Image (spheres, rainbow, N blue to C red):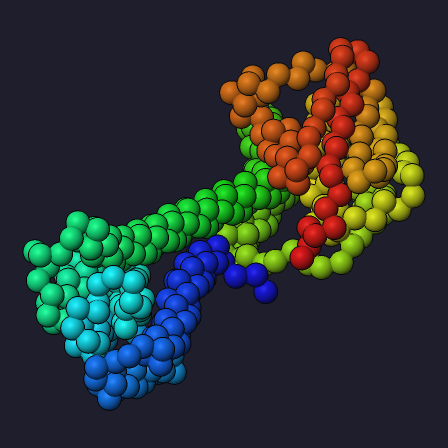
Amino acid sequence: MRRPPAVLAASEAERGRAVLSFAILAFRWVTVAWLSLVALGSDLERPLVAAGAIVVTVAWTAWLTVARPGRSPAVLAGDLGLAVALNLLSGYVVPAGQVVGDHPFFASAYPVAADAFWGATLGFRGGLAAGAVVGLSLAGSHLVNGIEVASESAPQLLHLASGMLNHVIAGGAVGLVAELLARSAAQLRRAAEETMLARERAARLAERESLARQIHDSVLQALAMVHKRGRELARTPGPVPAGEVAKLAEMAGDQEAALRALILRVPEEWPTGTASLRAELETLARAGRPVPVSVSATGPVTLPLRQVEELSAAVRQALDNVVEHASASQVSLFADADEGVVVVAVRDDGVGFEYDEPTLAALGKIGLLKSMKGRVEQLGGSMRVDSRSGVGTEVEFRVPIDPEADR
């Protein structure tokens, strides 16, 4: 089952955050290992304090890994406090003056994880703030180690400044990435929601178009017949036959019931399966119209039910138009399916007419435009009308075959 686009957008955002969190956690474990190796390979002034600091760091990292406590203010404060403490302890556990020069730094890079953690949680500004605090603690390690920062040489000061700047850059960079991920996720979610709304509007419009076609094919045509016959009876001299009035009343009652059922009907999915278009066209040909209708097809032309239903409805409307307007003596139906396209043609030998869509729309002639052209266009196809005076009319429908139309 496919998930909605909004759900996909949310899952992509969560995946990005999860990758960032995993990278920070992996960085913690790598730097914990390096912290332990530096402690083992250094001549420490206070090895027990260093060992205790390593145990606390390992325990904190393990708790973050197993418990996944989230990003509460208490966790953020604890992580930042540990990073500051490690930097300060780096100046306390080694001999005086050893935090400068080429000696390995005890705290190693673990405090950078706090910068990244704050940046990932609080964004760019949060990362900068954490980096600044941890960077200042790096300068504090020099004071704890008995070194006067003001008396350090220019290279030593430059090295210290670059270390402090690295913390600020690390926090700010991760924060910027986190904000970009959040912003991208929000934009993707909005785009997905807009797409869903557009699809819903299109579905409502399609349902409205379908309802309009069905009303035209049944109720409106019956009402037009009632209107026409009523006017004829009104012009007839003498009393109106009761039987004719009864027929009109019965027809109006039937159409009232049909319209009520159409309005109150619960929308249903298209049925699954396929049907023969040729069989449907042959059924239309046997409907008892005053004009003889012949059918020819290159085989059964098996299509999804929805396409068969819509195409047969369009052909039915075309036949009704021929009977009502064309004064034709015969009609032929042709159907063919080849290379993924089904072609249906309705040909008559009637009087012909001028096919002008704007004029037809202005006159309210929605039979051609809605019941015929609208149907095939909703199936992704097209309609062509070729009509000449005295020669007849050919209406051709071309629709791509969609195997997924009923799924």
